[in-house]
Amino acid sequence: ATATTDGATRWRRVETDENAEIAFVAFDVSVAKKASSSRMAIVGSGIGGKTLRAYDLMSGELAWEDAAYGDAAPSEDVAAEMATHRDVKGDIDLLFVRGNVESSDKMVTLTRGEVVMRSKTTGETDWRATIRDEAPNAKWTRVFFGSDGVIVYALGRDRESNAPCAASI
Image 1 (tube, rainbow, N blue to C red):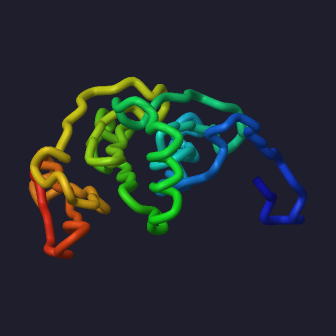
Image 2: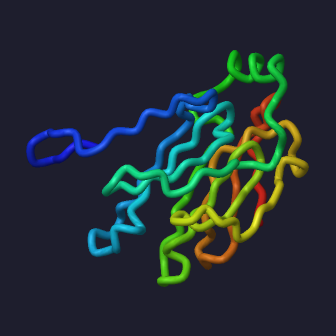
C-alpha cells in the first residue's frame, strides 16, 4: 500500500508459496465512514483462484486464508493444460454484498463453477452452491444479485459453442 500524500510505502506483502500467482484482486473501500475492520483486499491466487486471502487494507495483516472452491487441486497435467488455455480472469468473479449492516460483511465468489457466500472479514462460509453440473462445458465468468437483492445469478459461455449460460442460486 502506498500513501497518497507522499508516495511512501505503508505496507507490503510477499507470498512465497506455490499458490502465489495472482488470479484476481478486489478491494472493498466503498464507504469512507466504514470501520477499518471492513476495509479488505481480497486476493485470489493459484490456478483458477484456488486460494483466497483477505488482507486488512490499513495494516496489510492477513485476516484469513481459505480455499475458494471445494474441488481437489488439479493434477500437474491438468494444471499445465489449464495454464496453456487459460483466459484472463477466467472462471473467477467476486461480488461484495451491499445493503444493511448484517449483509455488508458478506461477499460472493464464483470460482470454477462454485458460488460461495462468506464473511469478508472472517472468511467463514455461509453457503456454497455448485453450478458446473448445469452446464458442464461452461466457463462461468460473472456473479451478481438480481434486482430483489436475494437471488444470486451466474453468467458464462459454453467453451465449445460459445452459447450463453446462466444459473440462479
